[in-house]
Length: 106
Image 1 (cartoon, rainbow, N blue to C red):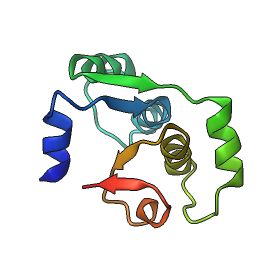
Image 2 (spheres, one colour):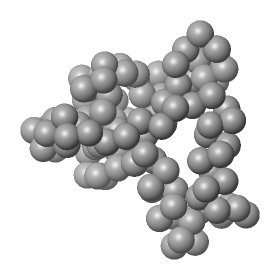
Image 3 (cartoon, rainbow, N blue to C red):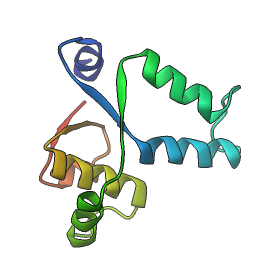
């Protein structure tokens, strides 16, 4: 799987959006995501695996506001906005995200 190789390659900088951590916290709280720990433990795992947290900036929100409304999920849309502003690749199999003019891999 190409995504796994990209993530495991230590030469690549790996980021996870704070929006993704927020979404995980919401889903754990709603019992839509089963996880024996807490969100703080998810954050620890992210750090232990070499990922950096990507905060949401004003530039990201400005880009979000001006984006074409291809995807209805606000969390996915902010990930796209972050990828646009930061010139990053998103690892996803989500076909709606792939409709935006950004780099994706899976």
